[in-house]
Amino acid sequence: MAVDHASRLQYLEAMGIQVWESRQPSPASAATASVTVDNDHHQDLWHTLQQQVAGCHACALAETRTQTVFGVGNQQADWLLIGEAPGQNEDLQGEPFVGKAGQLLNEMLRAIGLSRQQVYIANMLKCRPPNNRDPLVAEVTACNAFLQQQIALIRPKIILAVGRIAAQNLLNTQQPLSRLRGIQHQLQGTPLVIVHHPAYLLRSLTEKAKAWEDLQFALHVYQSVTD
Ligand code: SF4
Image (cartoon, rainbow, N blue to C red):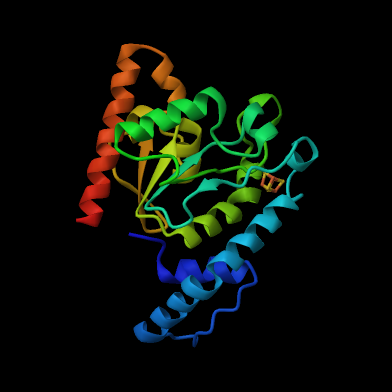
């Protein structure tokens, strides 16, 4: 379902958040700590994380960005969408998946009965690579802790990796998209499904059909974990 408890605590601790818990927590004490974190500090944690991202200079992309692109949406969403990195429009507006790609993503979501406001949308990288080049391994590594913290805070029931670059990096594989689609993967204990990038919806009918298959499969996985 969501990020396992140990990982979650690890991410929260990495943010400098004190979680009151013995070193060998009982299930009851773990649950208490979790509820406390959820109810009392959720907004504080988001705010802290947003500030950390906004001021981050951990990789060279900080030098060329207009602004960081943190993420947008429902902070307690069941669905978390993760793309590759901000593009030009995103860098200018400070929001992921805006412009044409954003409209198409909204259409994809609508196709499975979801609105943009219901889900959370983020990218692996919070800063735009110059000329939209592929992210470097060092950049993904430098930015990964932020994404992991977002996952730990949202605790989604399903993660959609949007496009090949996001899929390969999140799953740490070089396999082609064709081998990764249609399979229920896991990321930190959360089901992960790969969907085509919305740009595919602009192309051939075959690719539209594939994008639709991806979404149907994602919906199937979501229903199977929430039933
Ligand atoms: S891409 Fe991530 S690690 Fe690099 S500067 Fe931006 S926020 Fe920091």
